[in-house]
Image (cartoon, rainbow over all chains, first blue to last red; front, top):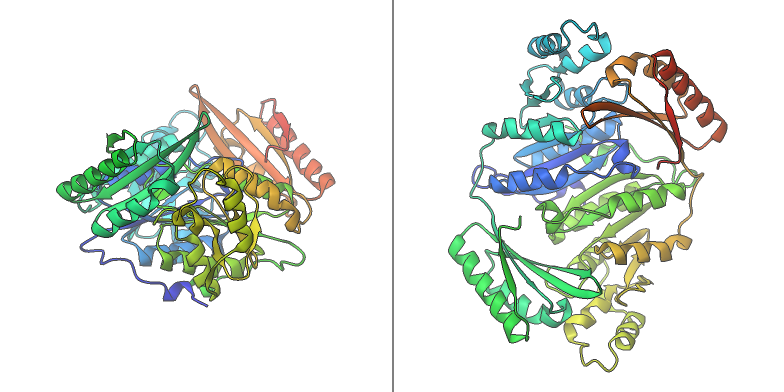
Length: 264
Length: 264
């Protein structure tokens, strides 16, 4: 049986950065909350040339978080986490990340100062709220322009809030810290040809264009079959060439394709 | 550094079944497609007393799928997968699952018969479509009442389509094969008290009710803070007792709670 540690290594991070996302939270695993962060993070990172290569969702259990963090931060250039950095008992992300790195949790002076300013004059700065200033020793802060309590970065791990509006603000602020690669460009060829009808011709086009990743995604809308053929690559000319062949294939199969840019 | 194989084992499956979900697809990792299956699967399994304990999203790469399948099928009672069982070149789930189990891919006679019936008289039953009848040797079929091409089960692994309407039909059909545990019941206490204000009192309630899992989830709606306190457990009386204490805590903090049943 293959174990994780025997899994193939990621591509050389120096030449081709990669990312993983760890979603921390019982509410996602129970189905109570629909995750709204994965797609946003994926599109943001993709635009920076940092493809998201793996996502995991784990419960609010320290051992599970520690294991996932240590596997993912080793395998990928960057690891992003969402969830578990609030003031309540189920917010155990900071302690778990500290454990993963083998460092103590400390109260971050700048984080404390930000909370003190945010709650100044309200009488609300309880010890529970001050716990949101606790980070692994050596962490740097990630700004939270929405509600003050910061995220943090330690090594190649970026720890963000789970509430989407806060996560999005944190991610926008930390982007300058990331070293991207060539942006991944995409085209979509949408048609009414069923997948099974175009599969053989599409396979041949994929074989001829190994540096363009071609995916085929069926959908059923209003009783009609729609197939989206999505092409991704970093070389604009080669992406264009593969897209033209896919569009010609659709026409040869008797349908008129709709070719769309940058569909993510 | 901790590796996956050193991670703590799941609870004894005989007494407390657990599940993992493996989402297979570049379109999820690129952010092009918003996953719509996780929450549905989580709620369905939760209602059967089979809590979803981990989710992974991996790309359409055989080595990644094989590794994840072998880790997850060992660690949890059941593993469900979505995606990658169509007729195109990027549909590699059946071959990858066969590789994970060390068995060959074979054309399943009953699956072929279903496709032949479905496409009878249309002239559309190409070799590409017949590939959707290929399963790992020893697999049993999962019905697809939407578009005929079946999913399959091998061992404790259930392989389903990625298109939500098909996945939901497949899951509904395979439920009788699952052995559940005590249903997980839930209550939600929704209030306007900010998390930081109730955190200390809530921590004390959680400590007094170790068999009820209490989560706290903030939301910001129309500029107002809302906090959902979600309680889960399998013992109705103990769940009720913990819920009553949480509601009383909210009242003591000056707000009137809204107590909701079965919010998943």
